[in-house]
Length: 250
Image 1 (tube, helix red, strand yellow):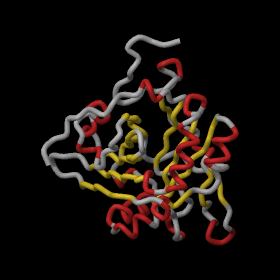
Image 2: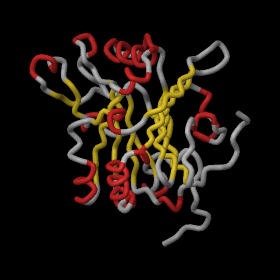
Image 3: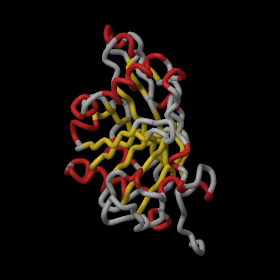
């Protein structure tokens, strides 16, 4: 059945609101397998500790022209983006901006291994960052064809090896919060577009979780820990809001 005036706003509801449809939640961190403390010796992976950056919200903006540097848009995260230091992952899809927002805690409050990889990631250049940021998607519930397309959820992908990434990092000042946006140009890869087409055809029957990990390659950075994660439930794209045309100058 349909609901009158069913278009949602920003951000999407938190599960189980909206009858568990077109909403987001925080996934169980144990579903994400990451490099263990002994990984450099034995290549063993283990379930991650809880994500360090908490999810603030998720947006699905419908648009034929996905926007880069979405943090500049005044509508994102219900207009509350600048209330906290925020890490943003902005997937540019052929039909939408799919965006997740995460609180960046003070560096001194992060576990030492995460503070190590995060500070180097922020200070690094494009090539360094491209070689560090990993995505681990896990199909929590969904049809076999989607699980086959996405994979078993055990091996994260180094995003920058397969897809162009753009970084819009603004360090915090005395008057402004920090914004660390990573744009993922999904449309640039034929393989990624193929996977996306399968997923898009089954979003209403799908619960899928995404974890972002900065690769640990030194003893001091282990065990790997999920930096941030979120999951979406039963996305009805027709209920998602259109991206407003209200860009600031410049």
